[in-house]
Length: 372
Image 1: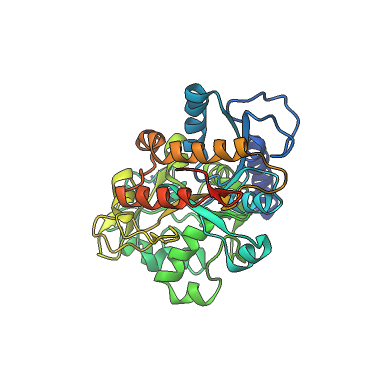
Image 2 (image 1 turned 90 degrees about the vertical axis):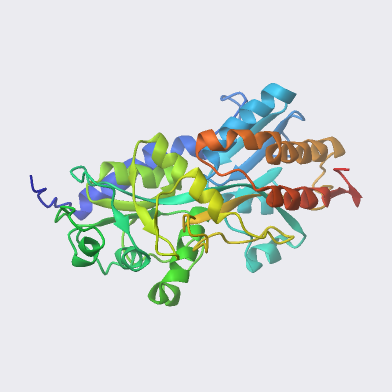
């Protein structure tokens, strides 16, 4: 049966955006793991010595929730992690209100300049950014190539039965539904991974709007966090957006196979993300995994990094607190990696773990190494 085009007014779309923001973002913006849910907001300088504070990436939040619960069981040290987006985590780190941030994009030159001292980037895992869509009557998995994907998000392709989409999905009955774009409204490392990829594969995208954690989107409406974008997609027939693989699987959302540089259509999985991450990792761990050369690698993959000040004696911090932060992150890159696969993240490669160890060992307190 042919799917009728669904007409959505600007007012109803706005209502969906507001509802999604309220439903999928508010609870995630002040999320605690292993702590008292009634506690008042704290900072790293006022919270108890046995609770560490972190904030940032929503991309990695499903994994962090598991890691920090397990770490609490193993050590008795609690972690209060606020899933507010990479930009929010960087801001809180800059303001010295948390013990660590997490971002799916390295600090920009402007962000690093504002902080003014060395910040370490410790890779935690790799993940895939999937292209999720809401086409209820579509029976086949949608295939997309770089050109079509860029043109959809540029607003050049506006109907699902466009000839360019039909060409790479032969035999698939595509609906005439209009395409509704869902994107992030907040500063986001997930956005950085996605737009960095588009900038690599599309000259039009690279020229404008370009790459970054926050950009001027040509079309669409924004949701806060991966949760907000997932909410917009699920509530809007004809929607398409980008979210982390774990969110898509947990919410039973459909997502596209994407053509990679080798010409293969790749399903985003832990294996295809791992293939993309099997590269030489530089000493500072700041590397992009998108548009991989790996023939079986998923092309929109990326690392997420925990961010800490290299010198941990600042803002009245104790040596004990600095020790606890470094030990937590050391556990994450070793024992914690066993939890990645089940939550649809790619564990760090052996080479990436070695780089992460070296970076963590460079953290100091009063100029002396914390991790021996």
